[in-house]
Length: 183
Image (cartoon, rainbow, N blue to C red):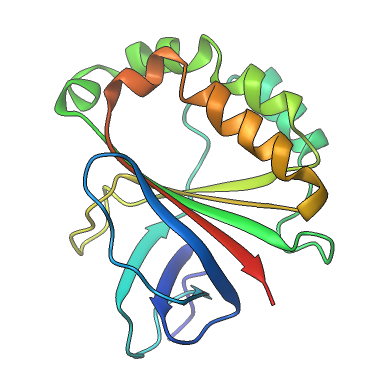
């Protein structure tokens, strides 16, 4: 059976490539603590985990063609040797967000989200994973994976702080901020 290269599972437990250095709720309930995190592409392996979150990469739904081209030109690849820090930020949006049409959500998103993200490229790479449409229930709607170098930690703090002040964040009812270090 071919591997679904768009499917990604984040496994937290006692082993994994990344050491979890913090796990804090930003909005909503806490998330179970773990020591390490592994990221698996394709179907998740059958391994013991404290928790697993699965998402799928998809088309960019909240960008114009010009924004997509600009982001693609500036975005660094994930997994660079210099990217020894990462963050996994699972997010769930409110029912009010999902009751809006695509163009209404795009209008809120486009107010500032993409412009903010562009300021931090290429130092901070990111990939969004969608969870809502998977066959298996997932507690979050999106899993955002970021990687960056230790020298860019302050820039990453500035990025997430700026994003959390946008109108879009009024529609977030659960957000966990999981920080990692490559060891």
